Image (cartoon, rainbow, N blue to C red):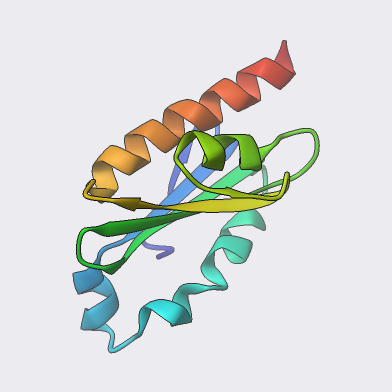
Amino acid sequence: AFDNAERFHNGEIIISTLTKEEIKSVNAKSNETSGIISQLRQVEGTKIACFIYEPIPHNVKVSFRCDIPYDVCEIAQRLGGGGHVLAAGAIIKNRTIEDVKKEALELMEEQIQRYEN
């Protein structure tokens, strides 16, 4: 997951992805990914962290973490999920990881820009 991590918006957003095949290639199970989002959030300079993976074929799970004043629950709700202001997520059916990543990035950038202005 850390090899796949990318920074966006001047390093304030970090996104990592794992495909079902990548998870399987290291003999891991999808439930062993739970701590990744918290570790991504700890990367210096990160305001919003996002982890996207495929727990089962044709289902993409996205998790978000942030600090105040951002609201990742709002982002997750726009993707059909929910959660709390500082920790939220969604499961999205019949979309690719790349499609979800693109939409999530746009929503995170909107969130940061709203609070910077």
